[in-house]
Length: 265
Image: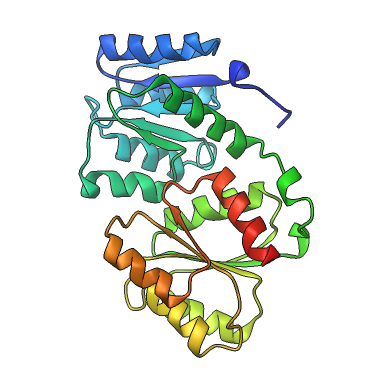
């Protein structure tokens, strides 16, 4: 993709409330986004974006025919739409409702009402996702970097791998839990491990402790990607020896900075 600016973005808004759709579209036009299309339900939006693929889909959580989670999951199941950036704008705060969207890979989750500056920040994250500025990683030999991505969610593994691939990382291996990751670590050498926290059989904390205490690659950088909000559990993860903790959504700019810092160390 050629270099584009926020003003060049084509954005599809899915919002059942006409008033809310006008508010979102108004904020986008205040930022001088020229191409904004609005739809009131998921099926109409899917039909449109399948033909006229936008740069970003912004959706509410509750639509007449589906939820925002179901919308993004249908997008991720379509090879033509699976890499399309998605943003949620919702007053929903339930972890159970939001986590499937985080796992599917989103640019941002904004509250209702949202601050215009947060919308602009999310649009900047969209640009960073589709056309990342790699100058910050110029000193890193990304072509040779070998990364292991560990997550029990197939959608999350795809999204994380896609973000890393957009940065120019070509050698990406995936594992669905800590036990599978351990077997891979014992068989091959990796420059970086990117792991989820909450996983069955062996979670991210246990995997990190294994790497630090028992593996032959004890100094390998470990980036934890998690939607976990319990501070005591996160403190235990830090004590286990992670090199960095990144929130879900998996933000491209944050990941670039962490990779640069971890590999420099």
